[in-house]
Image 1 (tube, rainbow, N blue to C red):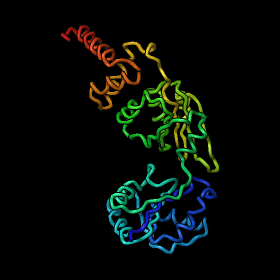
Image 2: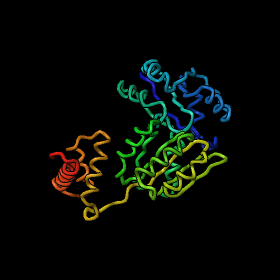
Image 3: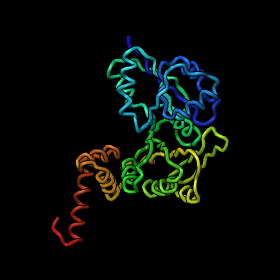
Image 4: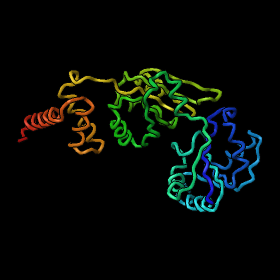
Length: 289
């Protein structure tokens, strides 16, 4: 019989938030795969438990190489527990490759639900929570970061991001540029820890605030784009939205179709606006369309 892969959520700050089943799974596991084995030792000490299984490291640097080894242990009947430094494994943390490989081999995968910075920040943000999407970490390079933000400039669902403290000011400034300085957001810092802070306000104001430096673990929640009726979208705005999608890598045909669907307009109307803008640009440059 094959074993079981258990994904276990761990506290994002306050150790008292550890799921009740976590201690039992740590003691029961044949193999404990930990993002940081030193952090694991601190966790087991805090919980007052002792692991009897083999402990191995499983982090971004060795995830690809170690996955086959863990899958073979699972195939041989082992109960493998996967824990990361904080929160739920595979959510912007190691785990996805192992889950995918286990599923491919028809190995049972289950979870010990636990704390989540994504859901905690979303709940505390004061922004709509009925529909949201998690975007993880943005690219480090400025151009790639802007491109990623432009992909979701018209997204109406609330957006949730992780960010490193030393990049928060640049990220908020880029968000203000792409989404608009008046778009509401919340910067959630050190959630469930001693110095927890939730800073709410327009992106422009938050970008200015972050210039002085922000410390700790950061989650940024951003309000979705406002709903806009067809009558409010002029030709220039339709063209702008198509260009944003093209810059993000979409082909023009797909970009026009997507913009038309979002705006509730016929594709022909958006196509005509793009062609007219192209012709106008050609005339202003003295070139034939």
